[in-house]
Image (cartoon, rainbow, N blue to C red; front, top):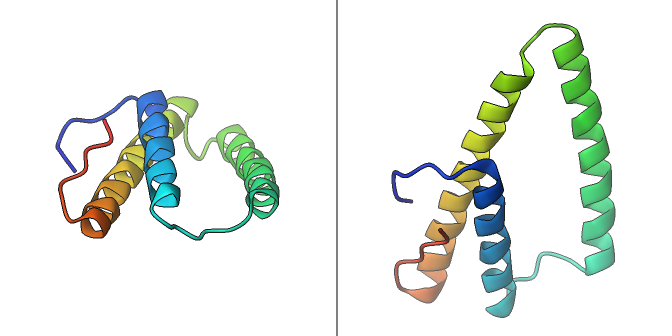
Length: 94
């Protein structure tokens, strides 16, 4: 992964591109229905936890947004590394 940090939205788009490239090259991470149910439930669980932790003063909304942006950028890096190994060449999802 290069050192430039993407905005959260841009990192999400890069992850989407990485998933599409993985699927186009034979990735097998589940059926659309299975994935959609998992995504919906994970989003509900995550939103509830974040709301609770912010309400309890554990962290601020700004800290949360900064941290999820950092993690989305890390996920971009993980896809770049995995796809580079799969394709045998450098992959940049930015």
